Length: 332
Image 1 (tube, rainbow, N blue to C red):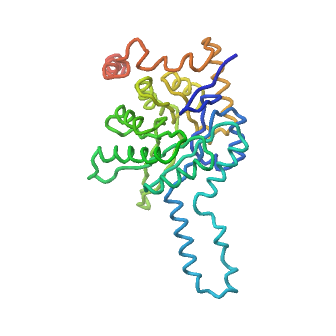
Image 2 (cartoon, rainbow, N blue to C red):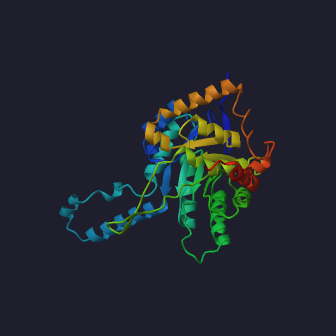
Image 3 (cartoon, one colour):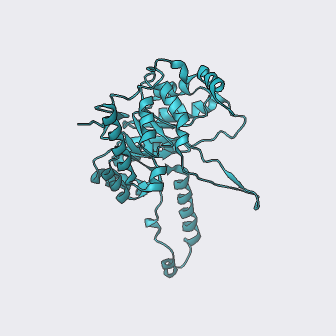
């Protein structure tokens, strides 16, 4: 009997494939389908503090503008008491998902103020979420910001959230720190239970005819696993937190590579948006075939086997391997 179970951020999961934050999780029917397909857990779509504040400000403007309108005219305006602002809908989705599924439900939060991180994290825990993924979507575009200030921003957020809630915390890390290893270590000391490698920042694009900056979103592709693969392989066994790999999982092959590097789970979104939620089962079926073919009984039997900690030549992760590639590549 094959054992696909794994432990992530202290939570026991039935499989190592986790659905990462994406629009599909906005509907309870999709979350139920993800469970049916074999997902180990679901990370809900991100709750953004600035969106909540923008909606609240919009309602306040309408209230001010209509406060002196004749009573008989108020029927032309929406019932503001039922206007969907704040976290109400998000928290209700957590409660419903918890009541109708048997897999961990992990919320995702992106705050912009200390008060927002504290308030919304507390609400999420009280709604019954099994864990919280901290999504610090912050691009340090101010050239006066020092590296230590950027790092401190992340660490301070983790500390205040850790002081606020008791459920496990994962940090969705970006790959742009000058010393990722040290930053991972500091985040673990600050209270993180897991690290998600890596956050995909969506860089802008240009419309060369309209001369406008336009948003652009491309789905991930398998070649993007290389950077997370490197750092998961380096960090495995060296810091006391769970490691989650996100980006580039389009089949069992990428998931297996991440697990061999030392990931506790692999997170998937782009391939579900491309192929549909049932694709989860296809990936897990192929994962089982791999275990059978390699005669592994469980995920733990091969997790981390290709990490820097366990491979015969650890230099394969470092500069000497780069030199080896350059010298041995046939460039003709």
